[in-house]
Length: 174
Ligand code: HEM
Ligand code: HEM
Image (cartoon, rainbow, N blue to C red; front, side, top):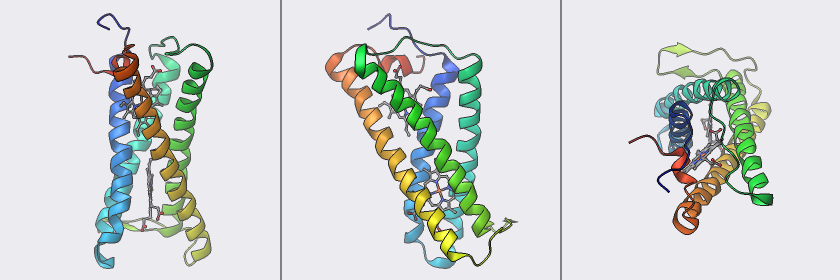
């Protein structure tokens, strides 16, 4: 396993920063209901700020992937390899969809962020639209977390059961 070819350090950094920020986003969203209504501005503001970070990381990741990132051969031959690549594409698609729906939701709501910035609302009073976009945003965010969990479990299965160095490809340099 020592001589495994790894992704370049920027790809590895962007992967782990994005994964951590996405899990943190999901957790901040779950925490909102635990706050009394007037205090919800704080977890919502953290959620929005982290959302901008995930958006920046995702753009950086896609630009780097198509411009200079190291490409490695598929980790698996045959159908499993095709499924793994399909899952990676689906993860990107879900991240982009959740981000776009989050931004749309915020444009509909127009929250005050950290008591500092009042965001504009493009559809004030349209509760039906707000609920629809909110539900879709939450549904796809849950789907993203489930798929990412399966993807992480598959990486751990490679590491523990197959011992083939796939997890090592995404390991930061020591
Ligand atoms: C990958 C990134 C994101 C994840 C995983 C995520 C996850 C979630 C989840 C699970 C909810 C709860 C939905 C429900 O009520 O069922 C939520 C709500 C929300 N999200 Fe996101 N979100 C992301 C990005 C964003 C972005 C970029 C914005 C805006 C700029 C945003 C704004 C909101 C707002 C305003 C709510 C409603 C909060 C409330 O219930 O009052 N999200 N998000
Ligand atoms: C929210 C969480 C996560 C997301 C969104 C995510 C997303 C991705 C994506 C899109 C790729 C494709 C390569 C790239 O474009 O950078 C990838 C590769 C990889 N991820 Fe994750 N990941 C997450 C969590 C994890 C976790 C928890 C693990 C390990 C336990 C992991 C291990 C790996 C490995 C080993 C690869 C390389 C696989 C290969 O070379 O075929 N990821 N991940």
